[in-house]
Image 1 (cartoon, rainbow, N blue to C red):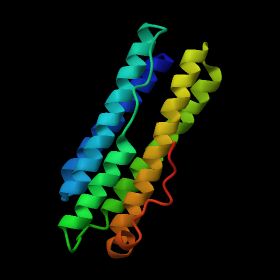
Image 2 (cartoon, helix red, strand yellow; image 1 turned 45 degrees about the horizontal axis):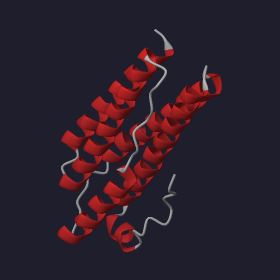
Image 3 (cartoon, helix red, strand yellow; image 1 turned 180 degrees about the vertical axis):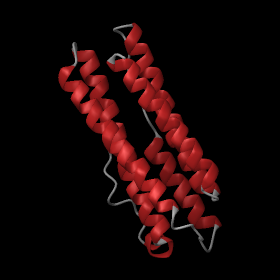
Image 4 (spheres, rainbow, N blue to C red; image 1 turned 90 degrees about the vertical axis):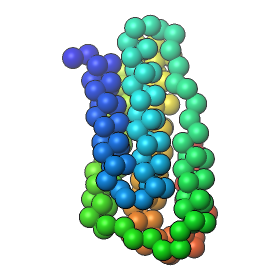
Length: 161
């Protein structure tokens, strides 16, 4: 299996995991967030597939962070109380670890890239995976303590990449 096939499989696995979480979470806002993450993994898959076949590929821009912020604002406005299954946190932590591994994979690939275009794409993908991990950390905080988190939900700890 070459590097592109490995990366594409990793992204397919990530997509499947996020779609599974979307089906299990029991909250429409969280379902939307996990669906957005799954769609982002599809975008990464398609980029890798394009890279495997040609030199002229690029990673499309991402609005995931802004879109997720909007979902949290909507959730805050629509729901007064949040009831989450705390065992879900373990599933979210697993997703976060997968994102961290994906980031490390893409950073490593960037260092070994054969050309500047590939290097830049791998770096951009690593940055997006880092964003996903940070988003999941916020999600874990939110599910762990929604009332407190929403009071302070200014996303001040979320870096723009």
